[in-house]
Amino acid sequence: MTVEKSHRKQRSKATARRNKMVKSVCREVAGMCNYERRIAEMIKLGKDRRALRFAKKRLGNHKRAQLKRDEVAELIKAGYH
Image 1 (tube, rainbow, N blue to C red):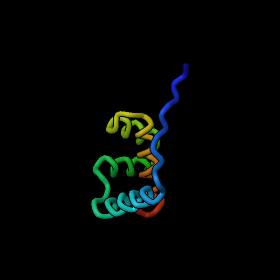
Image 2: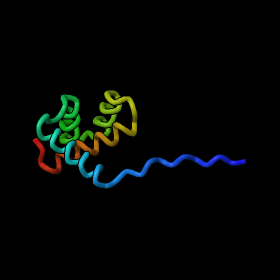
Image 3: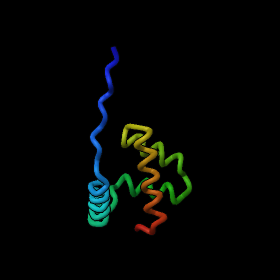
Image 4: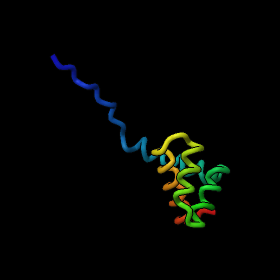
């Protein structure tokens, strides 16, 4: 007898778009955290691996650290100060 896995609830794309917009507004208003500024400085200096290590130490997880490093790098590319 096999038990079927329960599927995650389907989320609408409208809520995802709304959440993305809310996060961007929060980013504009609040700016970057101190540790995010430090990661940005390391990336600007070309020390990507060091930035990853620092992010991992702050966030506690390798995957989260990679995502944060990529997010901050995208902000730099977009001209965020």
